[in-house]
Length: 364
Image: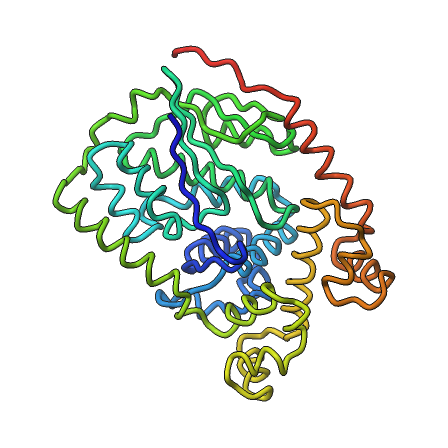
């Protein structure tokens, strides 16, 4: 048996989200004496905005903050720490619906039914095979350079939520990860309390399937039905993207069609405002138009290079570069590598992952 939940969007990085993840990153990096403005640089969110419970952002903005945090701390295990800090209460209505669910299976079903409210960078899956259940993540569609970071963050958040709804700090049987063994390998036991296997076919947390039928301590049938109705309504609202601010809207346009929206005037026209107004509103957020465009072009380039066999010259053309040399220069400025050097890494990683097998599981 396998269940999964995904939210199809025109562009993955345009998925709307609350400030919860960005706020959590800022809080954890703040404990390391890193000022908020440094970790928030370039994302269009200010330190003051972190108190705005109504503000919506996109995954593209979250990814900028994650990349900043990674560069500023040099700590690859921070993705795990962020995920572990995203408790069930971090997910608002969805979190409450999970808390009052009849069983763990019902709580996880809320994630499958309302994936937009969970805000994952992956499709979350649940597979049951006899004794073992595997809560996994797949279908990553974002920045390849942050895939390990985001895999760590999502799996840690999922297990933190499981522990919260069960009101018990339990450890899974094991954790399997599709990426190779990183330098922060010892951090997985600190977060999950179990063995971790790397270079596997999928990324998942394994636990006894009997836990899925466990009654939850805060189960309330009436509240469960009410909260599911409210979750459904909230997800429909978020799908309209109507409450995204100007940064998120500009990113949405540029990511959807970088050839058309690589000029400030075209974006301003689409947003029904003058160039001067758009530039002023971006300045108020501390972001320049070129900074946003560079971020979109960089993400698109990484996506094409890691997930397609498209020639570099064709990628350059799709991104609006009249000369391939100009694209190569820009890519080296963004990543410190030439496109061909970057392209080799994810291919080798994928080959390793598909050669590996699932870890051996046994009861207890």
